[in-house]
Image (cartoon, rainbow over all chains, first blue to last red; front, side):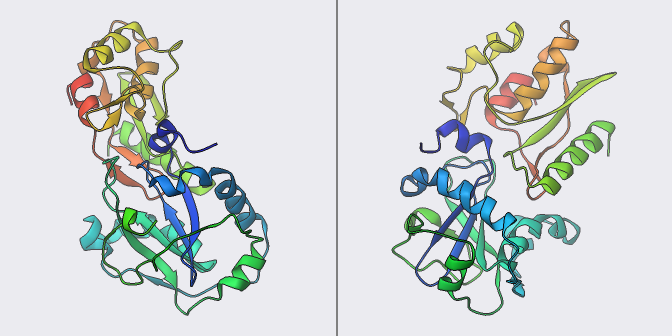
Length: 155
Length: 120
């Protein structure tokens, strides 16, 4: 079953995909998802459970977007709480992205929050987290820089 | 920070620690009764008639109206609990904390439907 509109509105979903060179995690923040990833509900739940259950030795150093204060209009005290979930994903090897304008359901603006400091080998991550061929592969390489972008142009 | 704000913040923080991520949570209340609740479609069997009537003046329940889904906000769920406990209350008399996103603890501004419904 695909994510319903009400489910997309009510939940801050964790979406997983790959762009061929890296594994990607996206937090939906209760916003609308692009059509191409609506059918990913079953494997997203499986990946999330797999990531939290598998006791892997993978623990990457993490780089955090230095522009978060400007992009999100947060103060320095708020950043610590903001980044927790994304740093957790990046330490497991995922490039972790978030919706920029929360509260605006249709808006598709996203930004990179945290990423592994050194390049990761997707094949090792596929094996470690027991990912399968159902994982959605985007046609374009996701942005590595720290600027905002339109998600619907990438998936 | 008011008591309602503190309660909402603690509830959101507890969800963040459990990695349980609704889109939003919010506290609502009046005098002694307070409730913190999460986003999601309110059950048609549980919604108070006062709240349902007001929402129906804006549009169709659970349908997209003004860029959001009517009857699915955390505000509606929290306010409904308050109205069940204090049925004499008018919608504009309900106090709200800031809505928060548990994953990041960001404050979420109220949508237009909630502004109209509760005169925010």
